[in-house]
Length: 234
Image (cartoon, rainbow, N blue to C red; front, side, top):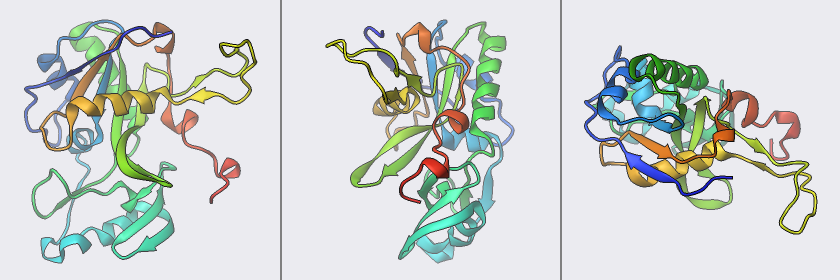
């Protein structure tokens, strides 16, 4: 079980550009310890990996529409300029994750090709650069069906559980838990967002004090993305 958690914003990171090595930048800016979970926003991961495409700024909110179509493997709903679609990663989200915020005019940011791989690269780089064994979560902002408001969720993980399976354990009354699987990676992403914000220039946070049992190999793609056969709404 976890005790107290500490969530620390990482200040002082420079503007990330294509080709930057995020592990090097984070290691210079953060005071890391073994067992930490480093939450990194998708935006800087995509920037470092060169996932930027040109768009026509004269089109305003419609500028990214052709890009959204290209990044979608299936469109589920449309309403005005909003498209809810499925990406090649299996994510169902608004506008295929294509984003125009916090980038220069005439550019849009795409999701990483493989955010689990991106997380592993950062995790391995921090181990080599800073000599620490940490987990990494790549986070992005998603809406939720049937609920207003946005929250950050995990789109990539390395070295920290994506889902903790409590099936087969018991509750406080001794009753067996039959279906309880906790998406701790999403919870860590949401907690970290509280100190990162949306317009504060803090794209990385450290969550300290997580249950050591959570520190294992993992994958958002394998553990969190629900297969269509199990989905009641597609």
